[in-house]
Amino acid sequence: MSYKIPVLFVCTGNSARSQIAEALLRHTDSQNFEVASAGTNPKPIDPKALEVLEKAGVSTEGLYSKALETLADRRFDVVITLCDKAAQECQLLANPAEVLAWNFEDPSASSDPKAFEHTLQAIHERIKLFVLVKTKRN
Image 1 (tube, rainbow, N blue to C red):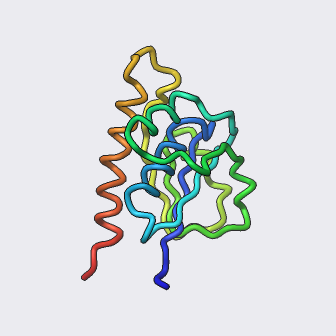
Image 2: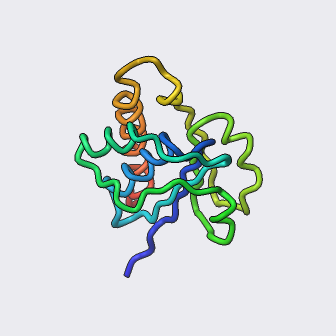
């Protein structure tokens, strides 16, 4: 069995962006990545986040909101924050090999009716590039 790169997506609420990112990375390449998400101040998952994933044909199975502290005993090779606030609060993580700060606007706070679709598309584009870089063989 080959090694799967453990990746953690972190957001403040773990209610939209990090959930979307977790589902998209799992959908895009579950063969090479073991993925989780958490929040620095978790809130229930926004139903619109689940709706936009399902509409895009991405499984929402196993998604649930969780606190960052609940994953403190797990080691992640890559930690990706999805908002500046989480990036600042993420210093408590135990020595991940790599921390990436991606800043996406919170679709839950937007008045744009297509905010969740735009967020999904933007995160998906970034994830496709991330997968390409991380799985490139020399």
